[in-house]
Every structure is written in C-alpha cells, then in structure tokens.
Image (cartoon, rainbow, N blue to C red; front, side, top):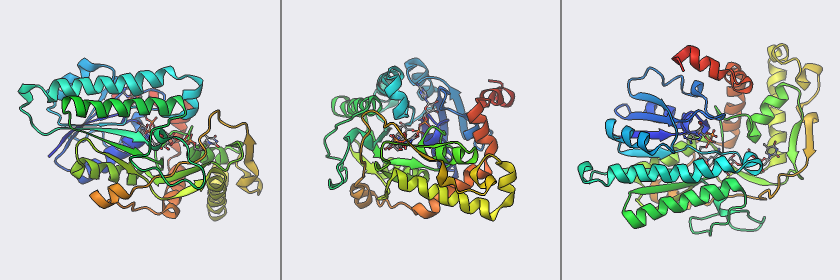
Length: 367
Ligand code: NAD
Ligand code: DAU
C-alpha cells in the first residue's frame, strides 16, 4: 500500500495518472497538490472527487512548508512530480514562470522530501521521489540520428526544456549527495483525453470544429514521437513499482510522425466522423464539413517557432528490458479514442476555452 503526493494532477498527464492509479490500486492514498494555473483544471479530476482515497489541495510546489506538512500529516511515502509549466511556445514568450516552477519548485519539493523522509523520525522507511521529465532535454535529432537513450548528453534548446533539464540535474544530485530515493522518467510527446488545447493535437481538433485555421509551424516536417497518455502512466507505474533508485528511464512509443502527417490524419478522421454522424454538422456549423468541405482546407503554414527542434525520438529499450514496459495502445486506436473523447466531452473543452471552469469550480467545490 502506497501513499502518494501527486503534484500538477489537475493538468493533462497528472489527471490521467490519478484515474489510472485509482482504478488499479484500491488500497492506495492519493493527495493531489496543484496550483490551478491556467493549465490546471479541476474538472479533469471530477471522477475522483468524493473518493475517500483522494484529496485535492490547491497549492504551490514552491511552498515547502505546505509540502512538508502534507508529507507528515498524510504519512506520504511517494511523490510523483508532474507540476510544471509545460508549453514550449509560452516559455519563449515568458520564461520566468518556467524557472520558478520547473526549477525552483522542483528544488523546493526535493528539500521538503529530504527534510521529512531523511529525518530520523521517519525511521528510514522506503520512500520514492519520482520526477516526470521530457525527451526535450536531449535536444534535437537530425533525420539519420539514433533515438535518444538515457546516456544521450543533455542539450536543451528552449527555456522550457532548459528548465526541465535543470530540474533533472537537481533530482539526480539529491540522490547522489543525500541518498534521497529518486527516479526520473523522460517521455516523448503525449496525446489523449484532458489535454489543454494549446498543444498541437487538441488545438487542431478544436480548430476544425470551429472552422479556424490549422497553424503549421515552418515546413511541417518536424518530427515528434507520439505516445498515448495511458502508456506514459503505465511507464511511470513500472518505474514506481520496480525502477531502481537513482536511475533514469526513457518512455516512448516508437511512433514518429511529421507534424503535417499528424494534422492530415486528424483532418481525415474528422471528415469521417462528420460523414458518419449528421448531428455533428448541426453541433458544429462553422466546421468545413458543415459546408460540405474537407478539414484539410484549413491547413495554414505559419512562421516557425524560434529554435524549433527538428526531431525527437525515444529509445525505450531500457525500460522495456528492465521493467517489461510495452505500450498497449496503437497509434491508430489511440488517436481515434482521442478524437472521440473530444467530440463526446464538449462541456469539458468549452469550459477550458472560455475559462469558466474556475466559476464551475466555485459552484462545485466552494473554491
Ligand atoms: P500541463 O501543463 O497540462 O499541467 C501542468 C499542471 O501543473 C497544471 O495542473 C498546473 O496547474 C500545475 N502547476 C503548474 N505550476 C504549479 C506549481 N507551481 N505548483 C503546483 N502545481 C502547478 O502539463 P502536462 O502536459 O500534463 O505535463 C505534466 C508533466 O509531464 C510536466 O512536468 C511535463 O514537463 C511532463 N511531460 C509532458 C509531456 C507532454 O507531451 N505533455 C511529455 C513528457 C513530459
Ligand atoms: O516531447 C515532449 C514534449 O512534448 C513535452 O515535454 C511538452 O510539455 C509538450 O508540450 C510537447 O512539446 P512540443 O513542443 O513537441 O508540443 P506541441 O504540441 O506544442 O507541438 C508539437 C509540434 O507541433 C511541434 O513541432 C510544434 C508544432 N506545432 C505546434 C502548435 C501548437 C505547430 O506546428 N503548430 C501549432 O499550433
């Protein structure tokens, strides 16, 4: 039986992780700590609210006293740190919150964990600090380069990836210097339910529904390695259960696509959904299908992202060989599930898009 502090779980991956974990570990306790920034959405945790194993705390990972108090009063033995500023474009326009949350915030969590778990009163009991990181710390690959392994040198290119890289180093240092039981996972691009519509896949889906341009940065030939979010959760689960302290594990789907290919695929899937269900035209009259047109007509090439990494690809053979990790979702089924989830969960994304989830929060939970 484990007692987990899950930070940043009102965000995309953290929320999926909470649902994944509650469904599989009936005896575990989950305390969520989330600041509810623009990316945090308590509605994504609605299915867990009311579960006696679950507690939501609105707060900042920079608040070392609060974290220490939660670790003690809830007798928590595991931290899974999802909390972060996560969007590369935002980091280019305003890096400060990335430094504050991703670097200083992670360090604050480490300090709190060290103070509580390495204190004599904790009695040397097993503990684990798992840090959720990204493949972007390894930099950009050329088309013929081998995929990133755990020993690929760090070469972050954006303020976002630089801040994640700094945090990874601090996590490593707390193991080597103080003996804190840490693990880190570096994962590729995730997709699936509850993703904030600033990221490529949900942005494209929702723009099609509203008949808006689908912005493709540069030539659209940048490559990402896409993983269904539940498979990321499965990878973290394996690291928490069997991963060796002090180790780093890459998680990926062996699933490289250029951006333009992904966008064309989503256009085709949406055209198929609209053709099969006339109700969609009534619900989304601004979509191209409403005028008998294909979604791909919305594709618009725009100015490239500054410093845009060309290609990411993960070599996941370490986690596969050591921990038995295998992605369960094929890309075909995962992207279809994602399209259908966004079509079936209009209230969720409408609330996210107009910001009214904050109001919803107050009416549901009193703030
Ligand atoms: P997200 O932006 O959807 O969610 C981030 C969450 O963190 C939000 O709920 C936000 O309110 C919370 N948060 C932000 N600052 C906080 C603070 N100071 N204190 C407490 N909570 C705070 O992010 P995501 O896409 O779910 O990513 C989660 C983690 O996984 C991040 O660390 C990210 O770097 C990493 N990651 C993401 C991907 C991906 O494809 N999305 C891939 C690999 C790794
Ligand atoms: O690789 C893991 C990373 O994946 C995570 O660490 C980040 O938190 C996550 O945001 C994601 O970063 P990317 O920059 O790869 O994701 P994004 O969805 O922003 O962009 C995916 C690709 O699509 C990228 O090459 C930029 C491009 N793009 C993105 C947007 C939003 C476009 O062409 N047009 C767009 O409008």
